Length: 111
Length: 114
Image (cartoon, rainbow over all chains, first blue to last red):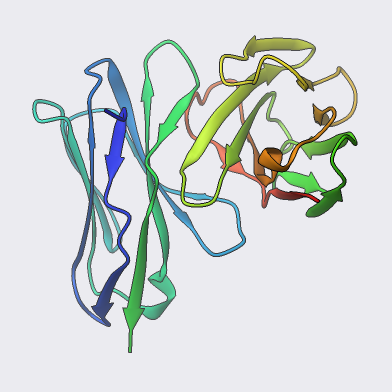
């Protein structure tokens, strides 16, 4: 079993839709949870960073963490064509700086 | 403020040659990380360095790969005697001392071994 599982997609939605992206993880030692966005041929860009269960909101993006279920989500409201990218979840354990990444979900927002 | 600078963007090497990938962290960032991204796979941790120190190299292959972050100059990831399986995108990230996980990534070096 992989430490972090993420549905690779691709996921195609119409403009304006609410997008839900998810990851599950197996190691309860993980304490830090991040979502990165990666455009084609570019480096990952940090979108959201949280270290506790619950919700964190930033503009159209909401990150949700459920440590009891080992499940994290990223919601995108009012999705735009510019949101078309690969979204990577990343998780870190306390005491170190190493991140474990999911394989990424490819999202396409269509006009 | 320039971001994390990686060069070259693209690197082609023949099997058996050496590849040198360079990374200049953001200003004020003293922590550097290298990750490798293979097609259809996520980013895989390779090594975490601070100035003149390797902190965690648990993701580095035991042979042919080495990394350094000297007191002056960029961090270098070196791959000796490259093989076709080394073809991948190599990303460098940096963070300030106070921020463990909030990395900033560079645009990557795409290594192709022919």
